[in-house]
Length: 182
Image (cartoon, rainbow, N blue to C red; front, side, top):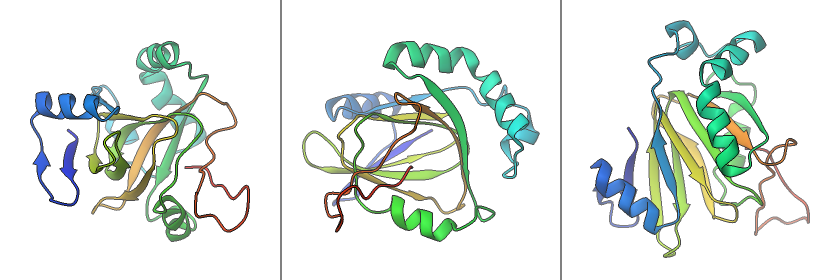
């Protein structure tokens, strides 16, 4: 279950009803899907084949299709970040810079943990730690950054409104058009 830490005071919000109310007020969405229906070999494994990634998508097909219809998403895939990811530190360096996207950023966590730090509607920064079963939607244009949690691994289903994927927009980018997929 996700947790919320308010910045800069560090106050934690963990009660589901309080979290939902707070997130709604900030224009954010966090839900929870049941990961127990996924076989263990797909959850703890961080070197999945393309067939195993397709199996994860098939297990959550109903939920993904519902979300696609709801948000206008047209594509989904599985992304893995772990100690086995080539150039992990370089990727994390890009993700940890504050940025936004021209479309929603949607992540459903299959396994592992991550931390999204998001500037909400109020301008206040909110740290949302997500784990297995958590689905987070960061609306288009919302400033945020991402890092791995203490376990240093995460496996997610990503949904896209544009099949080519997201491009991060950095306001402080030295060159026009600097972008990275996250």
